[in-house]
Image (cartoon, rainbow, N blue to C red; front, side, top):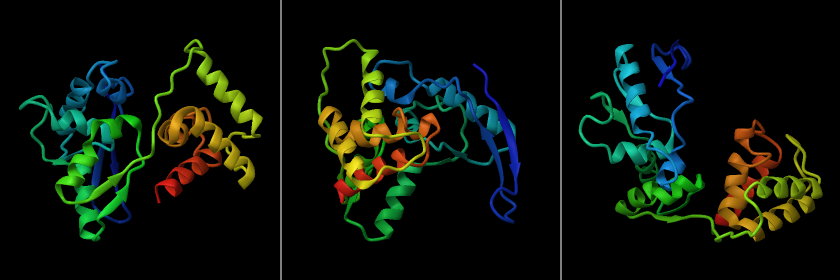
Length: 219
């Protein structure tokens, strides 16, 4: 395992806050680990924690929802560091409760939703959580066919990287995706990890539109 760290002084305006940032692309996929189809990322998270502690960090923060699934279940010593953890889940819940909300919609990766992290934390504070509908998508086609089929589907509706669709074309594309995959995988996951999704480098256009459509349906 190898990690990379860098110091980022003065990142927040004129604040004296100094960040030590670790980016370790070797960290295993958290969603796969939650589903039992991949290794736990905890050893990699612990290595990153030790690295930032050696560089003088006073606290830890992981900007990854699914990482918290493993951090919450870590035995004493497994986190790699005794530094205080800024818990993203608990801080989010606390802010929502302070704002007086009693029912919220959750847009997140399937791994985050399946982990129950937010549902458990919100329900403990009396807040109802709504999530997009899912369907069990079973296909007789070979596994490699799914990305090709979605590429063809996007092309059929005129979708291109970084370009927004007009309302009629977007409605048709969203309906096709939901029919095939459900709202969670067809809208939310496609916006994040899909062919024209954010993790493919497309942070505008169809990705943003699909995420907005998922939010509209929850609302």
